[in-house]
Length: 380
Image (cartoon, rainbow, N blue to C red; front, side, top):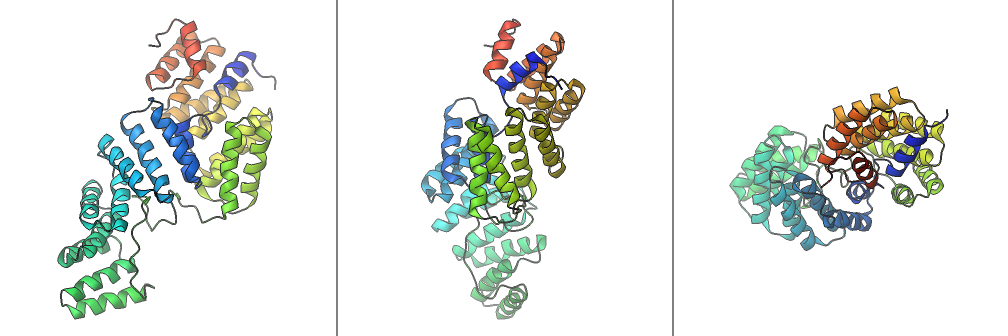
């Protein structure tokens, strides 16, 4: 199908809402694939851009801290977690993460304070109680540890390490019968020896089970070469090396090791590369696959909408744009691209409304700003 010239021009210049588009998105993409050095660089660039504040800036600091922990730069990580907490004190994740670092460093009092804060924000979260119990065990506050670990086990009864830790506290308090009962339960659950491993510093506060790595999102462990292929795909997209992006994303997909959001992201990144390389049919197949794995993902929907718009399939594009902003009402990119699509289709009033909305949400892509200025819209 012949592409609309104006849409092809304006939207291809604006690019896709992918990790490669800006440093903030790269920051999250790199942490997801375990590219710690790249994550630190992209997070630092996003923080230094001055474009983010509040909760968005807090997330950037927390994500950079996660990467710094993996690089063993714990003092820098602690600074970043602290900044994240100051910017967004209502988020529990930085308290969990900073508490885990303090626990590993032996600062049991600071760790306990962080897990208490996490517990206050997430009273039904197992890890908040378990983390507090672990910190109190380290501080030899045996009664406090028993209370915290009992609260943890009330939420999750199958966590053997919690029983084993509570057994230690019972034994220290002289309650041999309770200690033996907890040891027996721990052994039944597969915990034979007490392991004092601290909580993962990047622990997902909402995870139903112990995380296997940072921000795994339910993905099974994969080989290093697969993670490297994903990172290389993102890098190739950033460099506009579309064929390389397709090749590396395909390598990751064909490994058969990816699951969940990682697999969906690989298809979505390959879709971007195929679309930019003027292979719309392959791009559409990849977007469809990505959305079948991660239905309703607003970034995937917005990118597919751009692809539809380039092909002149405006009703389909609008359906995806509308679904994207319904899913994420503050999605500036989706409003910007929908506005440009309205403009190309000749609906200036709706175009202006969407562009102003996008600008108000912090979207500052040069194409958006240029079109707004041409239309006489305010861009202070």
